[in-house]
Every structure is written in structure tokens, then in C-alpha cells.
Image (cartoon, rainbow, N blue to C red; front, side, top):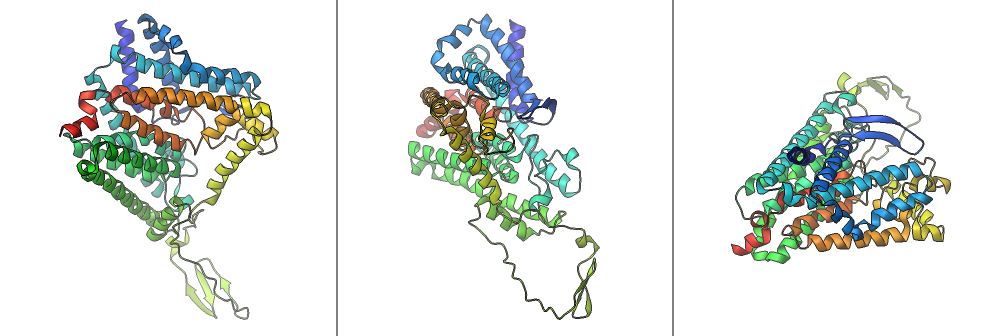
Length: 490
């Protein structure tokens, strides 16, 4: 029993650090027409943790509680049953397997909290989580430097769309498959340290400094989905705190937190400008800064220089050499050898295609969902979204996914799936509202909820479903972490 408990505690302690390695390293097991078969460190951790947790719950006679909470299981049960009418059974089975593994892990973390947790272990988990987050943030900045000095992608682990040639400056993906997942991983540490920085307790400066680091790295990923999600979550948290505690008591603390966000964005803007100036493209400090503003604002803020075409005199012969141009019969040098090796970046600002692709995939999913009564009520079956859209002639490859988790659930599980999901969320909200850290958990729910509008799937997003439970066991102690009571007592 004691060995099982120690193993459980070790895996639980390891989890916050394991999360960041969601894609590197990865074990490739092949692929078919609809998906890649891969094993990541978080998936391996999840399987091992569930095995140990099931053994421990069995010894502690907690498994019966899992069945007694049947109302929480309606959504995964229906999702599993929908495999029966899915056009992609294998993908459905694998998705259901991950879903049930997540359910078991979350249930075990909450059910066994009093069995294996104490305040010291919670503090240790928090230290590991924040320490691992700082290390990964440092790696993200190192990735940018490596790209600027010409280190190949295979060594820097940058994704294909992350290198300088895309925007003129690199945007890191850490050990995740894409920057959007790296940015999403940083939501939890940023929100936690921001929440802790609002407390009137010692070590506020430490939490504020960590908050600054995490937010700056989040901006550096250049992921609009993660940045928007963080912004909405921060607004939710500040409004929650101000309404609960009053403007008079909290305006300074809220002002400091918001000021740190502005400073972190300013720092990142400068870093991206410097990276562009030193990078392999023709971009300058200014062009990088205006690109960032243009892209993050969806094209609303446009400070780019307008290019006007000068009239061409067809009677004047013009000959072009590699480093010189003949204008009106006179030879003029154009740049030096170093500048001539530089190239233009692929994008000069807001990438409209990125937004339009997401909107198009959502529209395709809704079109297939509306195509018949069976689809409207019960969906096309778990894992069947890509193949259903392909069979409808809307996409060419069945391996494409709906870039919107909500639209994906609607397409695969229909109206019944959405109803059961809402029931599950209401039950979770009723539990969370009773906890002393409800402001933190609700903020995280809001941020993750917004981010799910930008992608779909489970393997690269296990943290979304596991982090709330982990945070609950790390920070639930009422005497140490109840922000509202601390402030009122002051």
C-alpha cells in the first residue's frame, strides 16, 4: 500500500512538468488516411497514473464512488456509444479511450486528495509547476535566438511555421507541436501567479515577477487564440475580484497586475523588433512591430508603410544585375553582399487565411450537422467529423479537424451531446462554487473555454482537462489561499 501511495504521489508531483512535453519527444507509430498514431510523454504519464490510481482507489474502496457519481458519466457514456454510428470507428475508439483516461485521472485526483495530500505536498507541487514553467519560458526565448543565428529547425525544435522567414521574427512553440498549444500551456501559470499577486500576503513581488515572465512568453508565442483567451480570463478575474472586494481595497493591486501585462507586451514587442532586425529577412525593427500589432488586432491596427508604384518610363532602358541597377544609363550599387542574401518574409501582417480557414471549417461542420435529423440529434459519431465532411465533398482530406471544439462536439454528438455537456458543466460549476479558490478556477475555465474556439482535439490539450483538478489539490487550502477573506480581514 505504501509503495503504491508513494508512486501515486511521485506521478502527481511530476505531472505539472510533464505537461510541457506534449509533442517533443514523440513516438511515431505510423498513420492512416485520417490521423497520425503517436505517443507523447503526457499520454504515457496518463496511462501510468490511471493504473496506479485505480489500484490505490481499489485498495481504499473508492471505486464504488466512481459508479455512484453516474450522472457525471452521462457525457462520456454517450460519446462512447456514438462510436456505433461513427464512420471512423478507430479514431472514435482512441478518442474515447483518452476521454475515459482523463475522467479516471480527474476523479482520482479529487477523490484521493485527503488520502495523499497535505499542505507541504501542495506547496511542493506548486514549486515544481512554477519552476518547470520558468525553465520552459527560458527555452522559448532560447529557441528564438537559435533561429536567428541559423540553427536548423531539427535542433531548435521550432515548428515549420515558427521560423523567422514567416513573419520576419521567430515565434516559439517550446516542446509543443505549435505555438498555440505552447501559449495555451502558459495560461495556467500566468493566471495562477496573477491570482496570487492579487493577495495581500508576503512573496507578492515573487509572484508578480513570475507573472511578468509567463505573460511575456505567452505574447512571444504570437498565438492569437492563447493571447485572446488570457485577455478574457484576466478581465474576468479583475471584475470578479473588484465586485467581490470593492474598488477601494483592490484598485492598486489590480492596477499593478494590469500594468505588468502592458509592460510584458511592450517587452515582447521590442524583442520581436530586435529579432527581426538581426534575422535573415529584410524586416526591420519597425516592420516587425507593426506586423505584430496588425496581426493581433485582426488587421484593425495597420501602421504598415503604403507602397506606391512609381510611373515607369518605357523609353528608359533598365538592366538589373545581382548587386547593381542601371538607372538612366548610370550604374548604381544596391546594398551590400550581406543585405543581398536576405529575403522577404512570407507574411507582411495579419494572416487573413488563418482566420478564414477556421471559420470555413466551422461552417463545414455546421453544414454537415444540419444535413439530416440523425446528425442534428445524435451527430456523425465520435471521431467521424473529418470523414463526414470529406464524404459531403467539403474537404479533400479526412485527416483535417474542425478548428473549434464546440462545433466538433456538435457535429460528432449532435444536440444530445451538447445537452449532456451542459449538464456536466453545470454539475462542475456547482462543485467549484463551493471551493475557497472558486475565483481562480472559474478564471481558468473561462480562459480555456475561449481557447477551445481555436482548436479541437485531446492529445495536445490534456492540460485543459487536468489542470483544474491539479490546481484544486495544490491551492485548495482555505487558510492560505482564500484571497477574498484575506483582503476583508485586512
